[in-house]
Image (cartoon, rainbow, N blue to C red; front, side, top):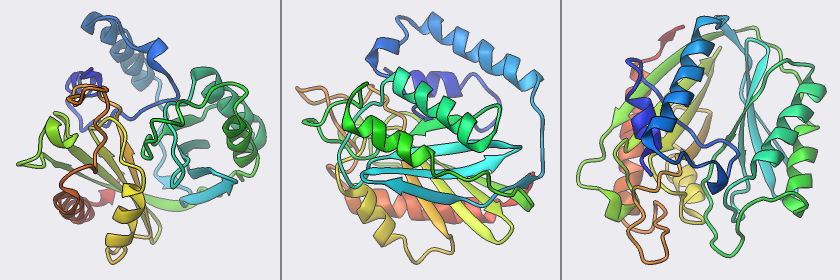
Length: 264
C-alpha cells in the first residue's frame, strides 16, 4: 500500500516513484519484495550513462490518448494520460507494447513509460488488451519523433509535506514532489502527488489555475499509493476535498523547484 514511500526512502537522493503500466496483479506481496526493485535500480545506476543535453518536452495525442515526451540520452520518457477522459491502470502487456512500438518508431534502445494516473473514473476500469484505448495509445506512440537533444539540461527539485492534509484528503506519506526540467529556455514541471489517482477534471483545474507560473509545461502525476484508501469502496483520489489548498501547495513547490534549478 505504501510502496512508493518505502522505496523512495531506500535512497539518499531525492527520489520520485511514479506509476508504471501495471495492475494489481503486480502488487508486491510483502515489504521484502520491494528489495528486488531496489536492487534492480541500484544495479542500473552502476551502468548509467550521463548526458548534460536534453530534448524539449513535446506532447502527442490521438483520440483520447495523450503522451508527453522528452528525450534523455537518446531514450524517451513518456508521460501517458487519458485526461480529461477517465481511466485507471494500464495493464502491463499494454505498456510493454507501447515500449516496443516506441523503440521501433524512435529507433532507440530504451524507453520509459509513466502512467500519470490522473483522471479517475471508477466506471471505466483499467486499460486492458483489446480495449479501444490500447490502439489509441499505440497510434499516439507512432507519432513520436526522435527529438533533437541539443539543449543544455538543468533540473530543480522540491518536496512539500502539504501540512494539514492527510490520507483523509487523499494525501499519502510522500505528499508532493516536484521536478522542474529546463531544456534550453523551456521549463517543464512534473508534479507527483502520493495519492491513489486524481478526481476526474482536477488535473485540468490545476493546469488552468497555475497557468500564470513561469513554466512552459506542467504535468501532474499520482503514485497510486493505497495507503490513502479510507473510503468504503477503497478509492480516495486526490482532489475530492481541499482543492484550493492543494493547488497552492503545488504553486509553492513549483516556485521552489525553479529556485533550485542548476546544470546537471
